Image 1 (spheres, each protein chain N blue to C red):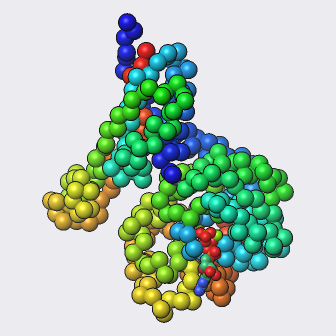
Image 2 (cartoon, rainbow over the protein chains, first blue to last red; image 1 turned 60 degrees about the horizontal axis):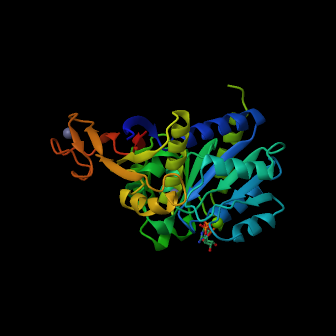
Image 3 (cartoon, rainbow over the protein chains, first blue to last red; image 1 turned 90 degrees about the horizontal axis):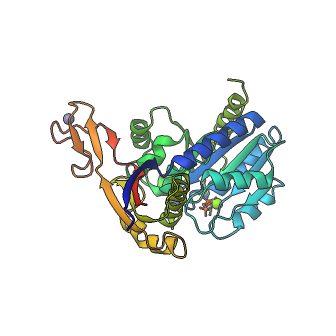
Length: 224
Length: 113
Ligand SMILES: Nc1nc2c(ncn2[C@@H]2O[C@H](COP(=O)(O)OP(=O)(O)OP(=O)(O)O)[C@@H](O)[C@H]2O)c(=O)[nH]1
Ligand SMILES: [Mg+2]
Ligand SMILES: [Zn+2]
Ligand SMILES: [Zn+2]
């Protein structure tokens, strides 16, 4: 009879993905392509904000979009109408994207001759936070109707993003959303987080957001 | 579902390990999942049979060890279970802590020959 042995592996399940993500990030850096990973709950305004962002930056940056809707290509169509290159990723019902899927999307769309790629991640505040996509920077949208207590419920997401957009600021009067309280909560989790209130509907704050993104792309292309 | 993709990743890593170490049969896979991991042990167990069916791991058992969510109080340096104490230090009632463990998701070991 064969004898079973206990063999130690001691390996994080995320390790492979983390390694792939780092590799992808290095390649993008060399190609001078900036990848923004955009995360949020469903319906918080990712696509509307993307359309505004394209409008603001399309004359100075060559932009491409990766859409990761679970089961439709509605968002990809909306983006395609602006004349921007867009690809729909097939996530096969997955609730998050990993570096491998992101790489496939980037290969599909082609990143030479591209300055900025925005990845609209799957609408979910939980597991996208655990999977590094290889992005240069991570952004999150929190919309006013979702409430200012979200940082308490999803601390991991808030602690790892580089910039937080507070969207739908135009309807703030109708909700008891306290921006000062939110800033306080967020600061505890992530002291360096940049918070920008916007309305993708009226265009308020989009200028400041475009400035942030422009600056981030510029420093990405600077040699170390 | 989130967990299914994760279980595939586990199988992939185990498979690489099996090939690298020239193993023939894996009797059991032992995972460590942190109490604060976004991956729920119960769901991992639930989708495991589907993930391994029609693979060489069909007969392989799965064991999950839950690792406690431990935090260190920033004020008095007490180490406590963050979930049990609802993020409040039992010693000084401080609310600021740094997490020591609880987000892991590791493949600890396999029992194999
Ligand atoms: N009032 C208001 N409505 C907005 C704003 N931004 C987006 N919306 C509306 O919110 C709804 C959802 O916006 P989307 O841009 O589709 O949100 P999304 O995050 O891309 O949604 P999913 O891709 O389905 O997760 C739409 O009806 C938008 O018109 C805003 O700044 N103010
Ligand atoms: Mg959308
Ligand atoms: Zn997921
Ligand atoms: Zn204490």
